[in-house]
Length: 140
Image (cartoon, rainbow, N blue to C red):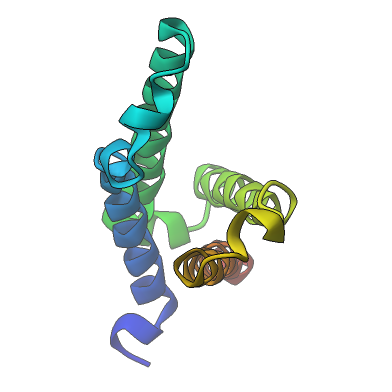
């Protein structure tokens, strides 16, 4: 197999998507119209929300750079690549679980846009975890 369908291609694609997702966090407060909603929050709480959002974005970028830029290294033998892939599996696997625990249907079912977003993110986290797990398993 060649191209994006190979494990190498999927790892690179996952990395690129995670980097883009991380960068999208820069626009999230505006896209979700946080300013009017956050006016009632205490200034410290408001700042914590913005700061945590940016750090989550940075985490997505950093966790995406490894498979994007170091694909061959991640698939090479050794404890360090195995540890990085295992960490990615645990991290994104936890995010996959959060999708079902922290976002009950009462939060998204009322809107076709939210339902589509929920479905898309569920598929995204599933794909990310499967690719990292497959890379870890392929190492032997």
